[in-house]
Structures are given as structure tokens and as C-alpha cells.
Image 1 (cartoon, rainbow, N blue to C red):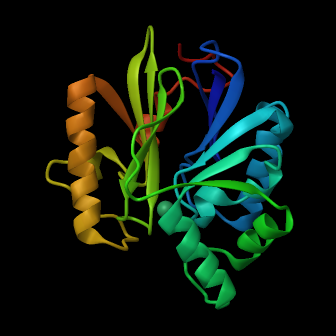
Image 2: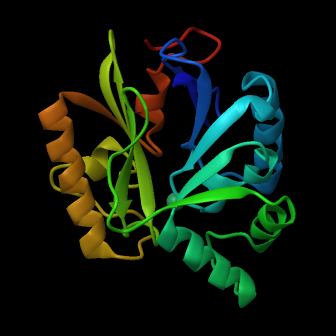
Length: 228
Ligand SMILES: [Zn+2]
């Protein structure tokens, strides 16, 4: 049961359906790639806006790139839900001490040292219901090794698919599809975009993109209210 979904971002957070139940879910859907300094500020901001990290029960990490997973170590009381391929790839890059562009060694080190409680979504799993009206979508490989999204169904707003970087912007959504700057599996990427398009149509849902500043402008921010 979920009381509050907060999309954590470097800009004011977007709260979704605070009333459907009791626990909180944070979905790491950060809008812009900024410096470490900006990430630190975002940590500070999320500390204020998300009330207390210890109240968050689930954090759905769409993937583990620096601009979506920095500060995950703050959520020590939560179950961190991530795609198994994403966690495996990230831990390999840590073990090999590789400079993997979008993955930050020091972030991974902090997650390990803080003993985070990981729950992995297997390749074969999809539409895992976290609470009534809220399910985790398995987008598979594409932009990263393993991507997750969220489908939220609300009484008034209706359906929302939180696509994160499975679709950067309205322009990437197309049609035609435009691939992102960072891509691991281009066929997987395109298949996922088409799956999201189909799901959005079938469920009459809006699609919220990972990095669309124009779309973000129109969202109701946490200081302005919430969706229900
Ligand atoms: Zn990314």
C-alpha cells in the first residue's frame, strides 16, 4: 500500500498520489545530468522534501547511472528495486575499477558500505505490483544494461508511465524514435519504446519522459500540490 510516490530529481520533485495508501515509494527519475555538486544539493533537497529517508519503503531505481542513482546510499531503510542486469553490470564495473562513463565508482562504493537492501527484477519478470495501482515495468536492456519503469494508475489523473531514460524526451519518443546519447542495446532500446507506446495506448496512460525539460515545466511540483 502506498501513500506517496515521489520522483526524485534535481529540480523540484513531482509528487504522485499521496493518498492511495500508507508507505512511500521513491522513483529515481532525475531530469538533468549535472555536476556532483548539484547532486549533493539534490541530496540535501530530497532530505527536506521527502520528509525522512527512513520513511521510504521502496526506491525503484530506473537504472544506476550517476544522474539517477547518486545518493541511493541515503535510503538504508528502504528496499532498493533494480533490474538484475543493471546491478550485475554495475558491480562488475566496480570490481574491475573501470571508468564506466555513466557509473560512478564512489557511488557504488557508498551503496556497498551502507549495506543497501537490494531486490532485483529478473529478466523474465514484468509488471510487478508494488501496491494497488502501482507496478514496476521491466524495460530490459536498452539505454543501460537493465531499465525499470513504473506504471501508476490513479482515480482522477488516470494512468502514468514513468519511462525514465527508456525515453529521454518527446522527440525521442517520435515516431520516428530517436536514440539517446548513451546506448547499450539499440535493438532493445527501440523495442522498449514501442512496448511503452503500446502500453500507453492500451491503458490510456500519459508517458513521463526522463529528460524532457519542456514536459517537466508543466508538471505539478511538490511545492504546488500533487496528483491523485
Ligand atoms: Zn541514464
